[in-house]
Amino acid sequence: MFDLTDRYSFLSVAVLFEGGLIGIASALGWWFSVDPLMQLAWTWPGLLWGLAATIPMFALFLASNRFPIGPLRGIKHFLHEVLGPSLVVCRWYDLLLVAAVAGIGEELLFRGVLQPLMGTFWSNVIFGLVHFITLPYAILAGLIGGYLGWLLNESENILAPIITHGLYDFLAFLVVARDCRDRGQRGDSSDAAST
Image (spheres, one colour):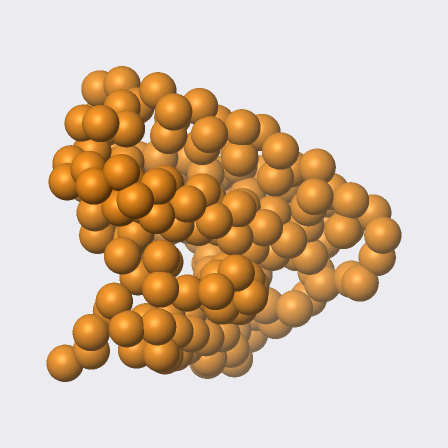
């Protein structure tokens, strides 16, 4: 059994899982004759689309993290109590690695293979379902997936959603890790002190 509060165990599980999605995307792409890299172009516009599209997602994350109302409380609780201890033991470059692999793996699978096969709506219903931690979290993930699908359609370059997804995850990881460290230093045992 892996101890996910151990840095190396967490990194191993996270990178193997998210990296495994690259293999799944490749296998499904081969099976259904869909090249997950078909819309990949290493261009400045693709990079700029990805960077710019991160801003609204991260702004919403910061707002919901600072002012968790209604079902957002449960999401914040999960992030801080379940994921937070794993993030706290990591260094910033560990979190960058996990976020980059997640951005690449998930985008190649969901936007690179499933979106061309199933359309934006159904590929993001599945995206939400595989992120089913709580119902609100799954719905939010599906909406974020829809946003990333729109980004692919508008930019015509899968580099944009890869950059957005990876950068968003990295920034969110940093915030959650910081919040958990701050709570630990204050001796808070519950989320109530930070909401």
